[in-house]
Length: 252
Image (cartoon, rainbow, N blue to C red; front, top):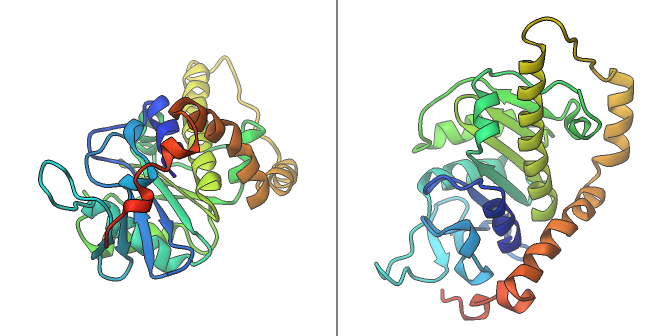
């Protein structure tokens, strides 16, 4: 989880206090781990994460902010992630951030076209939440976002908001998030190139897109796809022990 956050920092997914990843606790399925409010993605270690009750939002474990001596989670993040974890018991990890390309494409409230081999990972597996309800400070908006991911979508484009992906592992969800953001950027470039009418974009057929999806968009394959980026961040941080810093000392 910390490695994926550092990958996000490397690719400039930061935007103030926005953006969060959650992971369902493997031992206690009613709990999830999420990043604390306001700590930069590029500085996060496992020991920085907060453990929240999915049903109540109560922080049951995690470090205190050295400035405020309080544990502070992102309220909007809780409403989104808790709703997704409730609606999708198969989704053990959820990624959401406000990327530049993601927000730009989200303004059109349109799904992505199957114009590259890679975007076929989302063939018939991503949705558009075409209703902007403002900053998510209530349960209902989180539930509506979660509904866009049901019953089995891997991702959703949130109109005027950003992107969200899910996976059985944080590796899978994190790889899909980066792929979704890049696919938005590619779609924007293709649309701009076609704007004068002299060029025509070619769409991959449903049959071929379905074949690509079947070959490449399986949970174990997507986990493996993520490892190069994860391993880079572990190496850059100085090894697994550095990224795991503080985890053993988390207090209830």
